[in-house]
Image (tube, rainbow over all chains, first blue to last red; front, side, top):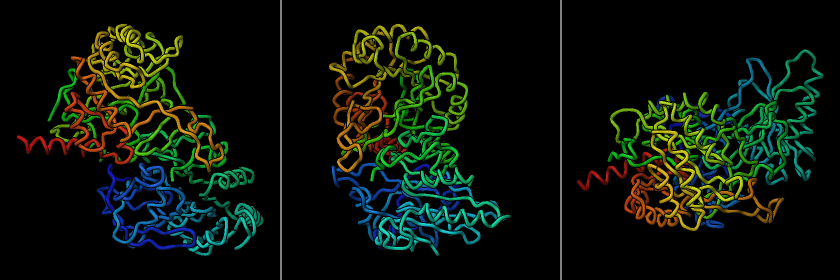
Length: 279
Length: 306
């Protein structure tokens, strides 16, 4: 697991490009601190604009925002953004040359499949971000199943290669839920007797993650879920990102996750129950 | 720039507010680099209670204009879990932590404790007294009295009695963290001093509530799982300045000033208002190196003025 230096770093925006309803923000990767390695799939950074962070809607944002590192290549980190609040709005405004604060990489990454093992990637909405760096990292091809609400959002699927898409409104790809694609994939995997069971890697809204968790529990498929929760710090200080564990205690998404084994959760609670993620 | 706080020698005047920095989690996130330039000249633990606490149900955070309401609920492993699991790790981290301005490693560990009664607090303080790794104890008195429902720290007479009851349990420095949610904070500070406190720290968070935003499923209902929470951050800086000045004027014991400090000039303001030491809290959430940055800036200014 890559360890960040214990301070935020000022990074320079190299590009901010539209991708359907999303934007891909690219920044020059920081110089590596001693002992620091490249971000691993599933790790995140707490980011904030250096200038004019504050003064938006309700005089926010104040805190930095947690974003998966969607890609790390050619000396750049990529973030996938969607303008849904004062913080994301400000980040979407950044342009080449803008300065960005970043603390990270932080958190527990995905555990990669064992050599020869198979993976299935399942994403929803802006939560497809960590699957891109995961796909870049995997040794072999793996099915990629992505769900979006409509055609504009479905353009985000271009972040990954060879994705099968489902949309809620049926405008692109499969008309329905991405978990229906997953059920089909797991069925066909089961049919191929003798083949090794895949590991499901998932990130997306809580309702999607819960559907993935339930399906994987039912079929006995191991699954790793990348969670999201409102957090102030990203490194275990604020205790704000508590999510109930199967044993009734709370885990901190920032340091015990964001990637957790599905067996650690009794359920992924409905949207809003964890608290609105400051956007 | 080194300072003495109730018998503790600090390399610089910047420490952390209790509950705003988990040194164990930070060490896991950043490795030994955390200790090479440790953000604080003393480390204050999260609040420890006799029994383990899971903390409040989420949501626990609400971002406000220039601030944050938290309703965390003091999750901790309980006294026994703290002593067995956390203390050995904190001892190692504090022993190797080198704060800004220090030639050698080592920062004092201050353990913050909370109890609902004087007897509970006395048990906690007595247990801390037995530990060489603990340099000082801070009392969190923002806990409702089980019979009156009033925060122990909100009523001067009750506070004096509690501090006086706890005082004999330790010879280590005893700090009382005052609550700002009361009519007369200086009267409470004097009560803490009369009860035998070696220092007071203020301000704790201001009680606050938030409603779920219009677009949320629970629109109009209380947002935080705990109902109310505590407001911190730049939004409370001016309140802190007024309360620290008012308390420092009235007590002879040292004052730890806390509230909305983001840069050296804010720390300077609290020091000028009579604080001996300044604690950084919410700003560390935005940058874990805030404490050492402020300490370095203060020392830089001090040097140029010599």
